[in-house]
Amino acid sequence: MTVDAKPVAELPDPRDFGLAVVPEKEIPAELASLVEEVRSLVDAVAHTKAGAHELAAARDAVAAANACLQGDRHDVGTMVQQTWPDGRVEYGTLTNVVSGPTNAAAPPLRMEAAPEGGLRGEVVLNGTYQGPPGLVHGGWLAALLDQALGAAAGAEGMPGLTADLNVNYRNPSPLDTPLEVTARVTGTERRKVFVAGEVRHGGRVTAEGTALMVRMNLPGDGGA
Ligand SMILES: CCCCCCCCCCCCCCCC(=O)SCCNC(=O)CCNC(=O)[C@H](O)C(C)(C)COP(=O)(O)OP(=O)(O)OC[C@H]1O[C@@H](n2cnc3c(N)ncnc32)[C@H](O)[C@@H]1OP(=O)(O)O
Image 1 (cartoon, rainbow, N blue to C red):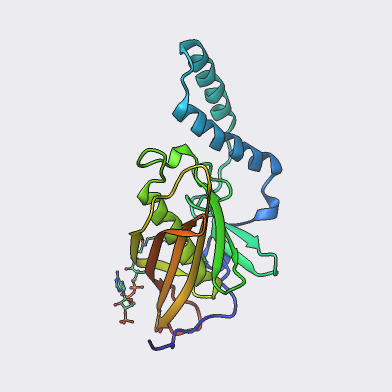
Image 2 (cartoon, rainbow, N blue to C red):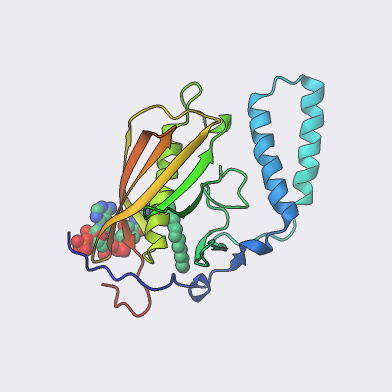
């Protein structure tokens, strides 16, 4: 495979594209703990056997919390700037449904540099990500892989959009237990970035994915 994509030294600054950026360290601790609470709430609501009285009280409490939060909002498209332990700066969307730190619907998946190259992360999906009984929904496994594969391309300075994603489900992925997600770039060809990754439970591959990411046009690279 031709290796003629042009990785950039640093990721583009989203501000140059008119997007707002929130440094992750500036996210209030109170918001982070609210997000955790809402994640737990969604799971509790999904599985509750509470009676009518408790359900009505919970509904009123949630409606009151909702009313509290109807003020200023971040624009859709707002990015979060995260700094890796090695000092590398990374951008993602603040409310990304897989990894967004303020999105209570995100598990969330956080990736880090893997010693063997590429990225790795660990994630636990609770019962709100259920497909078959006790197992993670296949669409969510695809979402985890899509995110990890995109992040692997981004981490090598080649952020882009997924053009083609293939997922092979090898073994069931259980809920409520750590799943390891790995991803790496396997080749490049002009703006095409080929990536591959796996989801593992207890060391056994449960899903594997390959994708073609098409690198975004960056200022100064001629777009080729
Ligand atoms: C601002 C800074 C932010 C930094 C931020 C960093 C964040 C870092 C972490 C991100 C982590 C996100 C991970 C989630 C990733 C999603 O969820 S992405 C969302 C789902 N994907 C989409 O919505 C994409 C929809 N599709 C499109 O917009 C366009 O089709 C694409 C993919 C951008 C390509 O369009 P294009 O740029 O016009 O590319 P085009 O010139 O047509 O093709 C370029 C090459 O790719 C090939 N190609 C294009 N499409 C396809 C296809 N579908 N199948 C096969 N080959 C294709 C072409 O044949 C061509 O090949 P060559 O001629 O070079 O051999």
